[in-house]
Image 1 (tube, one colour):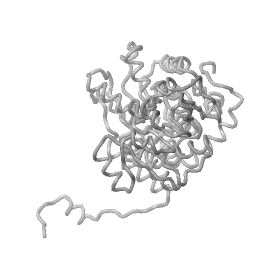
Image 2 (cartoon, helix red, strand yellow; image 1 turned 90 degrees about the horizontal axis):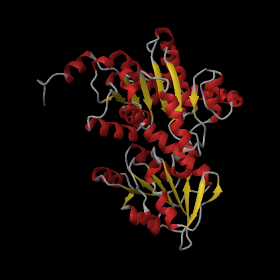
Image 3 (cartoon, one colour; image 1 turned 45 degrees about the vertical axis):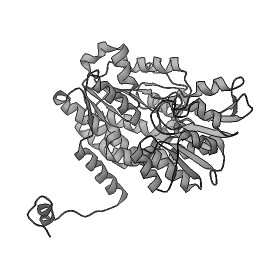
Image 4 (cartoon, helix red, strand yellow; image 1 turned 90 degrees about the vertical axis):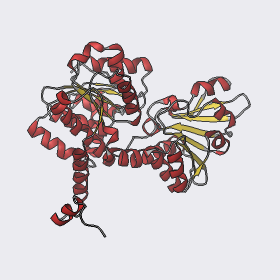
Length: 420
């Protein structure tokens, strides 16, 4: 196979071992793969996927391939690729892959172009870069595209904005909205993997430190919980009064970012918005502050503002730690170039939570293949029956059993006559 761009094909055997290890923790996706092999619900469909190229993603690609899809994969972030996994996808599973860890922006978009040259019938996005590139630069592809799926909060925000502006030209299922995705992937996956990334990058003790979490959505909730579990004193910043109130009631200190900037030791943004940590926040930070992001794009931290306040270029003091020296002599440390720290310096979400997220991706792709002609050009939530089935399969795989409603209980819940 000649249609690929990866670091080194010789890494494939290590990638295979990593993929196999992850598969053991992905029993729901494995069951879907076995069914897909028999039923081939995606036969004849070309799928272009822009996702983090990890062992878990490889198992999703294998599942789509088993379902009959002709799949091409490109990275959704320049720092999130596992090069050995990319090699295994190309060398062992014959899935064209365009991803190199540390690729520059020019290469990143060259790879997206290569994935779109596959002329997809369906897109699978993690941040909506495929969809936005199609609509901006590759509109000739729109005629053949039946629909897509989107994995992230950030991507769903972009797609809903496109739909609101009447610019979205095909239906997209917001996988991120599934309860089995945001409850578990965002909360437990982001929570654990972000702490893992920060610790791997810095090897600094969290216990006793002030840890600032910007945003109290599902990712923020998980991160705050895990940071507190490591002994940190957690501060939450928010713009939504309901989420801020929830953070207070959950026992966290809540304050504006400018106030948090004065006292924080660690900072991590998980909002999906722009310049959450800005120049005036850097001006207030303590010497030695450690700043990271676990939102999809690196725009949450205004690194150009920090550069303008600094003397010279940053020093790479550790892998994934750029240390900036401000003009007044303070050291401020940016982790992973401001990109997703849980994938830049760690391995992303544990496979057991990605099992549910990627089960949603696979079943949503199947749903789109069957129902695209009936759908409007807008963003849809994952159908409730798919969400419930994934939860059921996950419980079954964990050996957990639950009760079923009796006929009498069903009748009661669907009636109004009986009262006190």
